[in-house]
Image 1 (cartoon, rainbow, N blue to C red):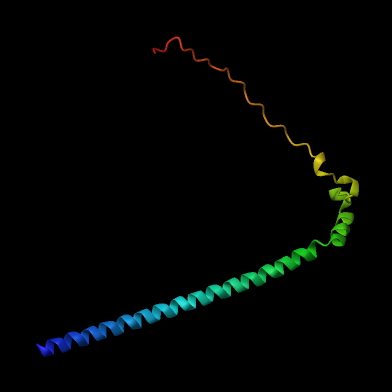
Image 2 (cartoon, rainbow, N blue to C red):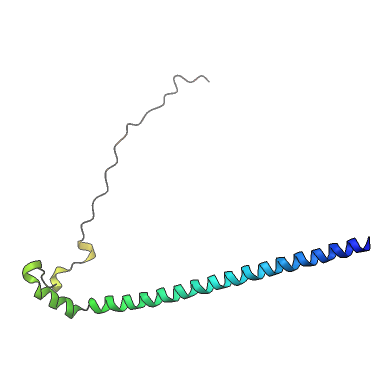
Length: 114
């Protein structure tokens, strides 16, 4: 009986060691995946910062003005003037649609029994 208990205990220890070994590798894989994801996010943020800087560089007002002048005959773009802007109270908002008038129904008490 004792030898059976020793064998079962030994097998339980082996099973627990195998489970712990397997969980350790799964944890290491999850940590590596999280680290890779963080690196991808960091790289994407760096690319986004570069793209924002390029966009700001390409949208400089003096550069756009020069491009509009160069391509005036083809595009017909005119420079903006201060009198082209308006105020918010000058915006013509659409009027809300009128609701259809429904006939009111009168309820008479002639058909009601007291």
